[in-house]
Length: 336
Image 1 (tube, rainbow, N blue to C red):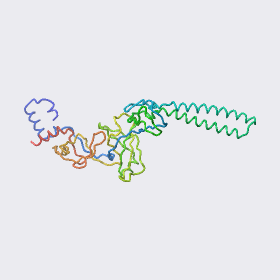
Image 2: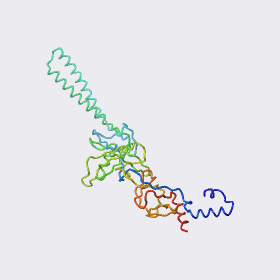
Image 3: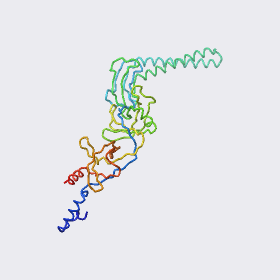
Image 4: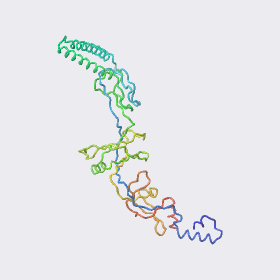
């Protein structure tokens, strides 16, 4: 029959035979077929989650002082260790210099008393007194040095400034908020999981995040809170993402699929399912070669958007047409 279609007919008899064959077997017009099969696959439950930064913090003042300079503002990218805020340090530096001088004097006196003590010219009490003064001076020097370092506020990690709570010239007190920043290098998705899923998720520890562009990424790891919310009875789970640029930002709503087991499912290629308003249907090729348009109830789409689960309306082993457009035309011709 293929040879009749491929090569030109050289007689009216050959043409007549070809037409008869095509009329008797209308499925020759059909596109490629595929067989619906039962497949063992993962049972995935999909929930909504919210993206957040792993590193997000607010930096507060560790000393009381007046802000001399702000090196960054909202929206700026900051590298780890760069200076964010500079306080006026004249008074703090003066106290540091005084503490340093006192320390050197106390150290010198302590060494002198120790030397005299070894010659048994002073009592032990004099050494103890000099040692106590030396240690006290050293503690004051260390505190003054810490205060001086705190007049410069450094970024604890690389990230973006999202909030500034201070102005140049403003007097900041210890504990007052200065800036808030976050890092986009490490992100996670926070999901509230129903209690009936938590045991399976804790055992299998598999999750995938569906991106807005249709792609999916596997979770780097999953972190569990060991308690449920007393009101919603859900568990807060953090799905950690790989450190890559996925064009994601904190606050974005994403779908997260959790693997909770395995099951047998009837899967067919997604392209075989035709949509008619709210109705899903497939073109089935019967044993007699005829095509029927059959409504089905569909389930979840597999990762990668290649296959779709058929919940009812189709049996394993039945053949479907892959090209629904050509199948529709052939079905129309079949009815004539």
